[in-house]
Length: 402
Image 1 (tube, one colour):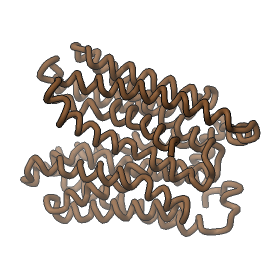
Image 2: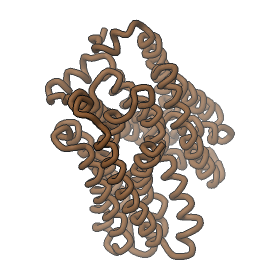
Image 3: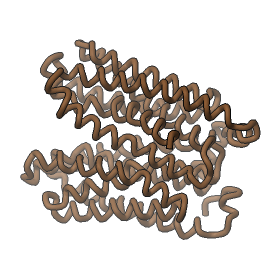
C-alpha cells in the first residue's frame, strides 16, 4: 500500500499538476498576465513534443541512470517548477516551465514503472502499476477542488503554491520509500531485473517481438482515440447544441471512473490475465464511444466513464504485461517507446480531426473513426487474451510476431 500511495502521489504531481493544472487555471491566468491564443497553441504543441522527447530519451539512455535517482530528480524539478509558476508574469516564462514539466512527467512515469517492476512481487505488479497510473485521475479531481475551493479565495497563484508544496512533500516521502526498498532488496534481484536493451535490441523488440509490438500498437491506437476525443469534446458538444456544463460533467465522470478503475483492473490483470483486463477496459471504452456517436448529448457522460475506465489504468496494465516478459529496465525502455507512439498516434488523430472539421464543417466523422479504433482495440485485446492463455513459454521467452 505504501508503494502505490507514494508513487501514486508522484503521478498526481508530475501529470495531474505538472501537465494538467495549467489547463484548469489558464482562464484566470490569461486575464492577469496576458496569455494569448497564440501562446496556448504554441504551448500545447511544444509540451507535447517535450513529453515525447523525454520518453524517447528515457527509452534510449534511461538505463544508464538509477531509476531511483531519476524519480527523485524529476520530482524535485517538477516541484520547483510548480512553485516557480506562482511567481511568473511573463507568458514566455510560463511556456518554458510547462515544457520542462512535460519532459519531467514522461521521465518520472518511466522511472516509476522500472521501480515497481523491480521491487514488487510478480503477482501484484499490475495492481500497483494500474493504481499508480490512475494517480493522474486523482490529479484531475484535486485540480477541480483547487479551482472550486482555493483559487476563488486566494487567487490562481495559490493553486500553484499548494501543488508545489505537495510536490516537495512527495519527494521526501519518495526518498524515504526508496531507502527502505533498496535496503531490503538483494543483489540477485537487482542483477536479474536490471538487464537493459541496446538501441538495436529495443528496435527489434518493438517491431518483431509479440508482446512489445502489441503493447506499442495498443499505445498508438489509444493515443489516436483518446487525444482527439479529449481535445475536441467541448467543441463537438457545442456543435450539437449541448449545455456548456455537460463537458464538465463528462470530465468529472471520467476522473471518478479512473480513480476506481486503477486498482480494480490491475487486480484483474494479476488474477485473471492482462488480456482479460485489457479486453474489459477496451470494451467499456468502445461501448461508451459508440453510444456517444449514436447520441452525443444523451451519452456524453457514459463516454466519459468509458474513457476513464480505459485511459487511466491502461498504462499500468500494459507495463505489468511487459514485465511478465522483460526485465524491469527493459520494461521501462519499451514502455517509454509506448509513450512516444502514443503521442504520435494522438498527434495524427488531432491532425485528422482538424482536417475533417475543416472539410466537412462537423466533427461527427472523427468520432465515428474513434469508434472504429475502439473496436480494433477490442479485437487486439481479444487476440492477446486468447494467445496469452496458451502455455507458459510466453512467460519464459518472447515469441516472434506471427
